Length: 463
Image (tube, rainbow, N blue to C red; front, side, top):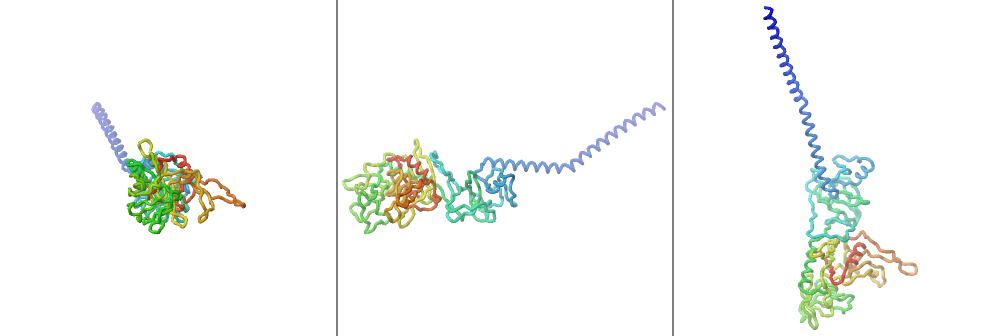
């Protein structure tokens, strides 16, 4: 009996130990399950938040790749505040972009209706030899008293600054939101600033590089078809052209002064057109009295009295071309380098206006006849020299491409005082203002003056 009792006690003790271990195991599993049920959702939420921040950082990284040339929000006064020691306090729903690269405005505001980029990459090759005053290919001119630049695309957004009359703004994108807005950039003390301006407050301008390139190729094809020369009657030195039916203008509005008569039919001298001095023509045939020519501009054929046609043919090659866009008030310069035409500069310009002592810069193809370090001009309605234009290339009658005009000052004894050359005028690239010439930055006019060579340089005026 004593031995059996001992055995039973041993067996019972082992059973109790197994039950205790099982109980502890079950309680441990229940504790783990309870922990998962209580703490799990919070961990999951934290993980999702972390993933969201990661995606945000990735998005900002993409914006950084885009570069500062496409900012979503102005870095004007906000950026200055941050630089002074921390970000300035911003209104609700505004983004402080002072410390981050920025991308298209649509990435910052999902409420915007539409964002488009109107800049089309031109099909021309650039090899710039003059690159001062860079502009986007599409830019905006402020032609009224001023344009308010805002921190966002909407009339309720804060005003950063007011762009002054005649100022030019670089274009980034077009935004439809509470009207039409342009995302713009400008430089302020060598810092690039960003903002938004209403489309109603500015005038859109564009460099028509493709159209200019086609014009150059047209001239090159004309040269390949036959010898090119020009109409020569500067200051009517070859003789005054006859009046057209008693008038000083023909049916096309071309002026008699510094022109030659172009007869469609030499048997009928009552009908003709005035071909202006400098007009580029292709020689078709020559005779004892007339030279038969075709205008490069439109291939119209005329018989021109021999005295008005520059002979021998003046153009030995077409390798350089200055193209002026009268509509957009800008210009580009092309040069044939190797076997390809390349844009070597593009800039603002001011062409001629309509007026008593003014006339529009004529459209067409012209021969660049000469260059002068300066040419002098009269005070309107007099023969008194008022000033000079520096670095001038003549292409049509008295029309030159030149730098900013300089008006003399006069001493008490009437002697002229030269105040010195002027580089810049705010009116460049705005509206037609000159008497007939094409104004440039003086540094660009100097560039053309040095670059010009006679016999292979032409000037084309388009719209």
